[in-house]
Length: 308
Image (tube, rainbow, N blue to C red):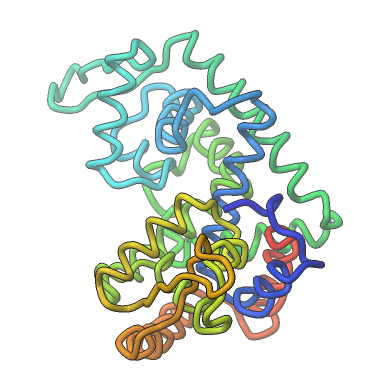
């Protein structure tokens, strides 16, 4: 998904606003994709580091001698994921682990000089991409959006009560993570975990497609993709899976047999009703740190950034 691929003036943009302007999960997914697309554009191609690799390497660069717990906290990743990424970065010669003198089971991680330079290049591109995305907001609105993202992404405030407290390097690193792309990623992790725990294999993307088909039945598959602002290959994969599950029907167009017209089956509509109720519960939990006025402000600002 990309905010650059949709225009709010056209039918697809109007549908995006109609269905998803108040859908925090959809907005976060779209924002994450838009950040990655913008960053690749500023880099002249795909980034050398994945978001997870960058988060881990950033932690090690900014907090020399970081323990696994500190990496997890700063990167907002699980111990298992952080361990995998640290091992991968070590194999690539970007991170060196030094065993503790008193406890040889504990490792302190340091970045190599080339890896530190790579982090700075990544940060420069990330900041340029985010500045371009957030240019539609004035500075006060931008600050409010980041604050809303922070409060919903870190609702338990655990980031500020862990092993990183007490050092100038850690305090500086925590401030640097208050960036649009990183807050979107962490917020989406939290939202996605809640969705998976409650919805199982019915993914948010599949649910969004069912919503579009329900709003525009018997429309061509291409138009459904435009309504979701995702590429044709991704739409085709989603449609194929939902059709196999008996949730969608696909028929050829009466005037153009190359068209694939989509509609919900009774089972698809039943699932949509159930999962819409589930989505409302998940969103209420996700937005609980904000009061009603802040929630409206958050959704309006995030939609303004990504649905344009």
